[in-house]
Length: 178
Image 1: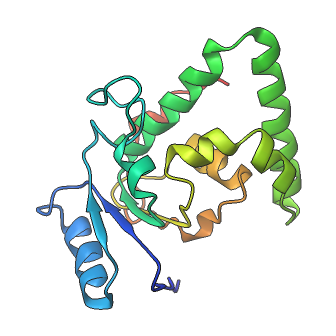
Image 2: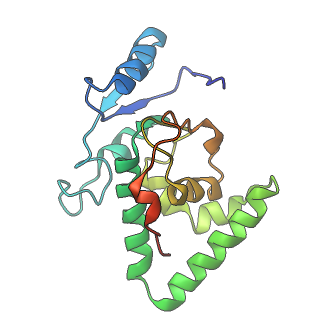
Image 3: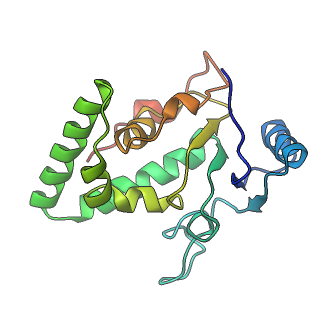
């Protein structure tokens, strides 16, 4: 698989540099002139544990186009989305599920849903800064729930490269409810 790097790309790095996967991604960025913004799991998104209420997380401020990830971080983000949806009324949950399934239906057929993206899924897109085009997962298997959410927003998750094949991910045994 070929991954294109563009001059306006921005990498959000939050894995430690001792992590070979992060070191590789950052080395490529340094060689190609892509700026790197650093974050931590506790400050990544607006609802992270170390972000004061009313403040913005690192992803919202940096607005990255590329991010390296491991399933633990993706699980936290997916859990945050599921928690927000589950805090709504039963009508809101039902509507979200309907739009989620509707988007999946058309996405599998090769169509995008820009109206749903701007009206319903805008908050999810903004969760990671609004410009994300490339997510590369290193480590264990990709979390299906997280991948489905981003696919349904029209994000091209074929660029999400699971680099740890045949490894069991305990998070896959849990089901995220929407």
